Length: 320
Image (tube, rainbow, N blue to C red; front, side, top):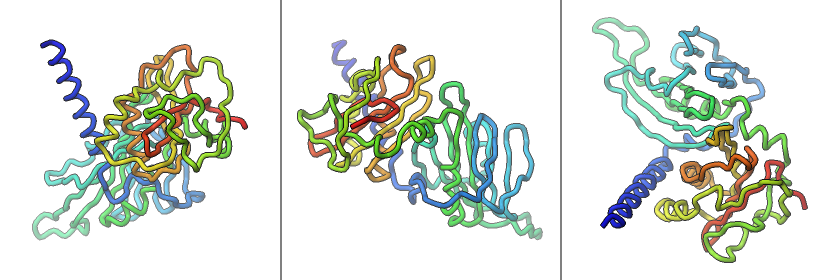
């Protein structure tokens, strides 16, 4: 009887996680798909919580209130950054949530939430600010020693919110694993086959897009099954959107306490939606970090007709 109750509990927990994965990957006009806008003329700004971002031309500082800092472009566009989740900005009675998705930016788990509301002028008093308002709020969750912070983009035109969403991908933090990957290796050295990998299906072929090479020998590099609970991942993936053939290299970074302090997609040939799906389910099913293992390394996931298989590679990539 006790074993039956325990099994039911595990099944219920798995269902809850699976529903979250499905919710985090539902379509939201591609707000969680990284755009490719040139930002060479954007200005770097340091904000609360160690956050650094690039501000587009035309936006100027409009003052601070504690950790909260506002930039404006005319009367109807604004960028706001600060500590916390950012939901305190939306103190309106009729604010509606129009969509939500989850991604990873600068090694941090991020929830992107879209909102809509209508501003009404008092009777017989035209302010020029009445009308619909649209917002996207990126919530960067706390990790390691870095506290939770947010970046919000608000406009009276929904096209502005979508057009300027590159803003969220300019965010960086001290020690972001993505920057370490870029400095440690070129794309040619990061792409590799999966030698000595843990597999969900015997003899699963590697993705054709990845040229073969051998991993650099690094003392203490953990085995894939010591990093990830692949059986739970397999179950959750089976209940979500199918992962097409391809590969993904995820950069993982762990704090001294053993907690995950950063995660980012270093390289992948998978669609954006599949990358987000894998990132979401991988992040919630990592095993406790071995204190004797390196604090940063790459986890490679290969997807084929027979399932997923995994390999751990050093942050420096691999050599032929």
